Image 1 (cartoon, rainbow, N blue to C red):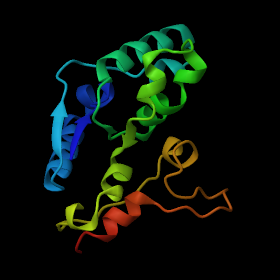
Image 2 (image 1 turned 120 degrees about the horizontal axis):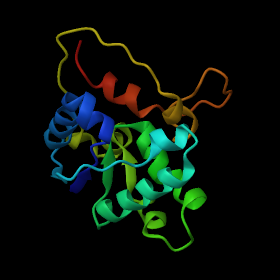
Image 3 (image 1 turned 30 degrees about the vertical axis):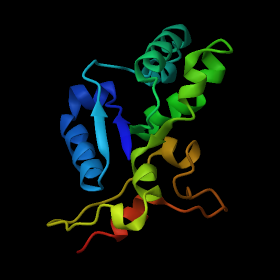
Image 4 (image 1 turned 90 degrees about the vertical axis):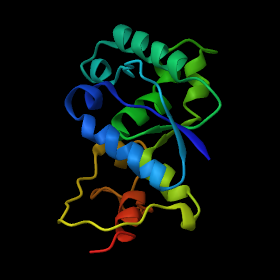
Length: 165
């Protein structure tokens, strides 16, 4: 299996270790990973700030940069939600970003969908905490938020359950 790793701008600038860990997880799961070295921003920070014209411009540029045949794996639920859900709202009909949304998969979801022999296992030498992000819960359906009565599968918890204590 082949996938493209989308490294969000804030990860590149503030937490590059997240990109390195994402790459290692995917490779450990047997995925051939392509990483584009060009910096790309999906426009989510501008969208959240209400600057819709500039958000649309960045989203359009990201769609062009990320277009291709392989799935686009994103280690940020906020950026994944932006790439999946906002093209129809911000970009003209027929824009390449519309097709991109069908290729984007949040990292834990992508790993959770791999057949069991290819899922990363492993062991953690320390305790971790899990903070389910709002975009992941509400826009991508990654688990169930407290206010929701619907119970959904949580791919992050499923992956963590496969790691030894």
